[in-house]
Image (cartoon, rainbow, N blue to C red; front, side, top):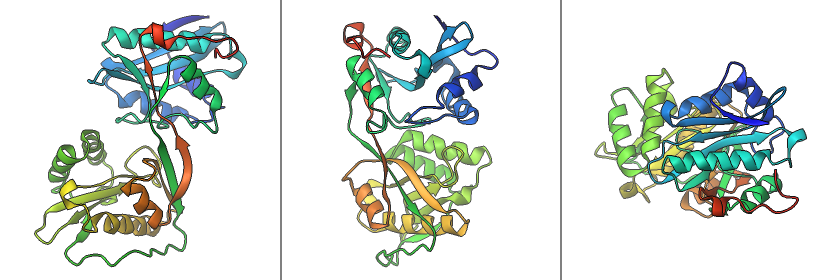
Length: 313
């Protein structure tokens, strides 16, 4: 076994196959391609553990973060080759590359430019969680995925305040929307929304809430992230507009529009348990789907590598 960097013809399908038994996220070739393309070229690094017959494992890094961190977007080792030090070698190599680029830690979490899972499903995959913890990984909160059916949708919501208007985004709204989102919510959400429309995506899947003075209060969307039209979000209300009912009005309208498209359910991957957003989702019939644990792993080898017998993957 030896390590190499970079992709060769056929690698995407081979790496995709390595995730087929993943208990966190199975990455088909299309999704693998999307995740690799989501980062900037100079920041994307793929390290492959090569065997006689092809890849045995890999680690996909995104080094584009500017805050002393790098993203470990995905990785896997073929089941027959686990517990042979391949995972340890890949993690060490990933830490080396990230540290050389100035990153102090690797994040296994929800990368702003796109992710398959916002961490590790510890209940479904305790082995990966243990592997990260043995090698210095520190858990960082919880990411709760939720879903709800849209069949026979009945929303028991409060009556919308009459001054709040909901309508679909237009090309003329996009600059204002992205400006508000970038300033008050999340810069990567603004990039996602703008990229969706510029790439020919349906702007009517982005709903806006405006107040009596036509001021922009918030937005909600679906079918904007990834390939699944049932994926809800991102969704947010400007801080100054919270508490006025805009969030509930947006969520209700979005779910009704999704049901009107013939979609059978809505789901998303990340909210904070017990947060205001979580309480809103619960009030609209969303139920927990999975709980992920984000991790950070320091790139300093003194902390990253603490092997224990029987735990190396």
